[in-house]
Length: 276
Image (tube, rainbow, N blue to C red; front, top):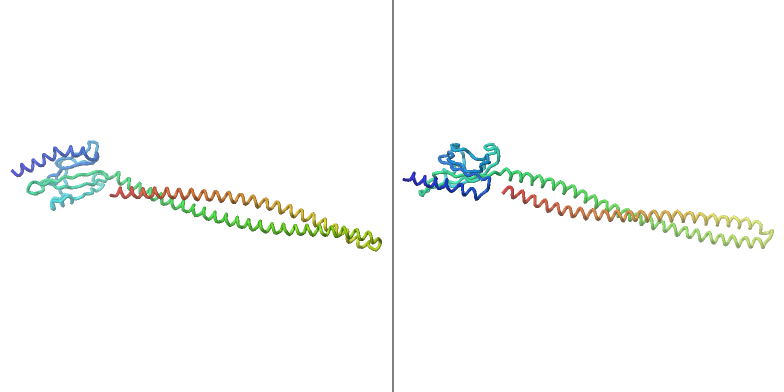
């Protein structure tokens, strides 16, 4: 009578399992074992993860543990068994006397999960490398920005010194003008003195030449200074443009770093989900 009751339970399982499998994953494999031997296997017809009736797993540690304890266990099948990673549950089937009369196993392929885990790990590693590279670029941009600031400070110093030189040239020009006036006055006085002022006339003439030469030199120096200031202005403009570009690059790098941080966070979460 008890055997008949046990058979009723097993037959009821055989009827209900195909419907249960349709409600679950397509790659789910449900197998009924009686005395460690496969009685029936329910899986997708295209799946190669199922086992044939009569397949002996009586020495499988998971089945032995379920038969011994009467409690379900989580099972991870070695990849070598079916050529792919499979894991699932091993559940005892009990009769009204709480005796284990059969064992049900459910298994599903975790190959895709392993691939997702591996891909997400590689993605995370790649993102870390990109993050490090962009961090170096950001650091270089900051260093460049600092160097540009140093150049701008030097240009300001050069401009200040050129302006000081320009002031000295102005003083030379003023002195030359005064010397020219003195030479002119000396020439007038020498002419009035007649023969007695002849020697003084020579001195006045030389002073006039010196004044003209000084004026010409001051003008040439002033022209050079004007040209130098023009170059300094151009360098300042280029420095300002380089500084703007550097700031734009730094802002862009910061945005990229933020985006990569978000992607990296998502990749790590995906990796954790694949493991769970």
